[in-house]
Image (cartoon, rainbow, N blue to C red; front, side):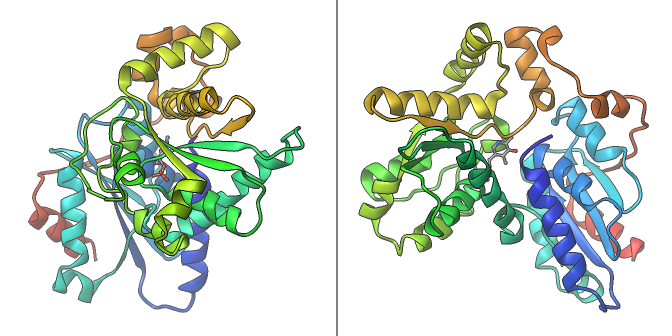
Length: 330
Ligand SMILES: *Cc1c(COP(=O)(O)O)cnc(C)c1O
């Protein structure tokens, strides 16, 4: 129920295909704040030769995301870390540089740093363009965190997709607008927002965006704009769009919607498309406070989750615990 599902599925099949004939099982290690982990868990479920370990911060992911992470079983194991997302990420990063672990296991990651995750996302853009009813080209607004999704759009653009302009729509973690304005890229610490899958202060794909434009700031500025939408405006956008059109956005899509509106106010002759990136039910804890729970349509697959049993292994936010767990498992 998020756009990352497609990327995770594609990547899992690639990994399985290209490691055929390896005698060692591959261990995929992922730290998640919620959304990446549930996509990876579902995308990698049952894939041969791949063992998936997901670290998530206890009590800090939504109920549904937690069920998506912890109820699948098979080759998916959830480690419930008694700490924050940053603890999870630090532990995973330490594992990737640990000599002993890397000698005993074939470790790999599965997030938007991995290009196999976002190559297939180009199709979203072509699929949208196929439905575009106008003669002129659209502006496309993308809710952005690590900039994987927008980089996929830019790849599509460079291979000929007819797009007029891109908007990298960010929440209060907006380092991109600063870059567009001042030509200086200065990473910051992430701020917590209601569109938390975009709480990124140092987008990992930013260097790729620079490379695609051969580091030419003037060219980047011509093709991509930034924008910053705070929580208050995100929430009022969800309410406005629901009241006006009876369409329920979730917080990330609302950031893109608002970003597109702001751009079109300044460019009244243009029209645009926005990417919505998740089902509102994944962020129901936020959405229900704005429009009420009864408005959120609950898909059957989610109802099914509530009948399953959560299975997680609780560990301390300590790298040595993770290391011992991985070695014992091997
Ligand atoms: C990951 C995510 C984003 C941001 O995508 P990036 O490729 O990291 O820019 C936006 N919305 C949702 C729901 C996400 O899970």
